[in-house]
Amino acid sequence: MGTHMKKIIFFNPNIQILKVLWKNCKLNWWRIMEKLKREVIRNVNSDISDEIIQDEALKAIRACIQCGNCTAGCPSGRRTALRTRELIRKACLGLEDVLKDEDLWLCSTCYTCYERCIRNIPVTDIIIKLRNIACERGYMMDGHKGLTHIFIDTGHGVPLGGADSNWAKLREAYGLPPVPPTVHSSPEALKECQTLTESTEFNDLVKYKKKEEKK
Ligand code: SF4
Ligand code: SF4
Image 1 (cartoon, rainbow, N blue to C red):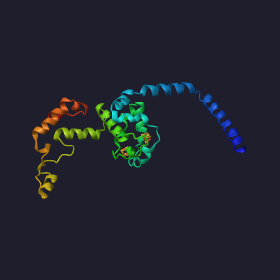
Image 2 (spheres, rainbow, N blue to C red):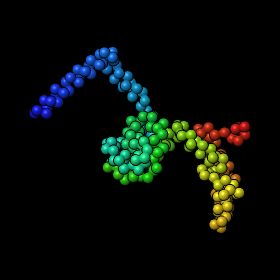
Image 3 (cartoon, protein in one colour):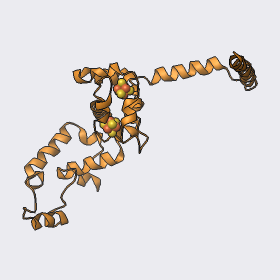
Image 4 (cartoon, helix red, strand yellow):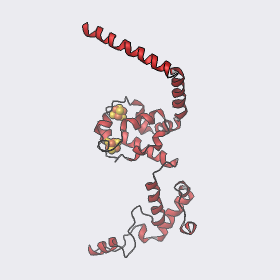
């Protein structure tokens, strides 16, 4: 009882101090709350959550209870600012911020969160879906865009670098043909890749310019 009384006596003066502070600072609490509410509502974009739950396998996102198991087990989150639970929450609310969030790209797709989720939510697959939506809407990191330019030029994300490259020499040292039987050795296949990226307007999305346009 003594402790309880102490608490009441301790908190009352603080509330008074707060009131005085608000009054002296001429801040209107309700106006601040209204402003916050409006901003939150303005940022909500249900397109994102609608797009996720269109996929039958990802509908389970609605069962998230924000327990935080996914964040607690995330190996990437131990080294980076990635907070898996936060991504899932933002996705549930359809906050467009989640698509612009660099943390979205810090997941290594190890599937630990999926294994630990008490609601059996395919967290990793949802993150991959969010990345796809982000890319479709043009939210990519510069490094990703650069990589796509290499892909459009060569048909590979990590190209060999020509028949004279160190990689080609290494392959030869192991008794392999210097150029592997991939898009590298098939100009027709490369042309197909380039036709695909152009006709789907992927080139515009990643701001790719052909060599002649670059000059
Ligand atoms: S572990 Fe599953 S239920 Fe818990 S916060 Fe993560 S996604 Fe939601
Ligand atoms: S899949 Fe991604 S978010 Fe999930 S635990 Fe692994 S790194 Fe973290």
